[in-house]
Length: 95
Image 1: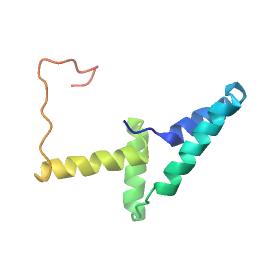
Image 2 (image 1 turned 90 degrees about the horizontal axis):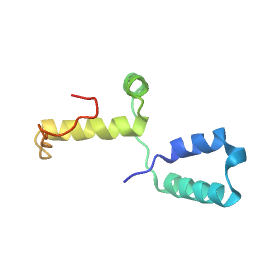
Image 3 (image 1 turned 120 degrees about the horizontal axis):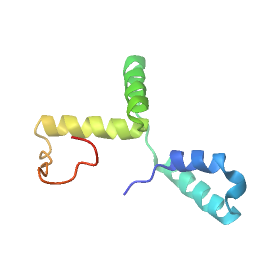
Image 4 (image 1 turned 180 degrees about the vertical axis):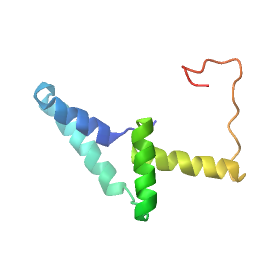
């Protein structure tokens, strides 16, 4: 499971008085490690704007949207097997 460290840092900033020093240190060290190992993707302005807009609309991060778009493209173009839908399963309000 991947962790959204930017979201955790935002949450920590909102309640910094409530966090213990040890928890804050752990969070900052993990975030620093992720940043050191992160690669960046340079996109043109129109693509950046579209991804940011869709991410805001869906309540997702930019990186989550990029991962989703890439996975969908790979599946649609037969580079990855298509995920099977469970027809009798719960949908958590989404169809």
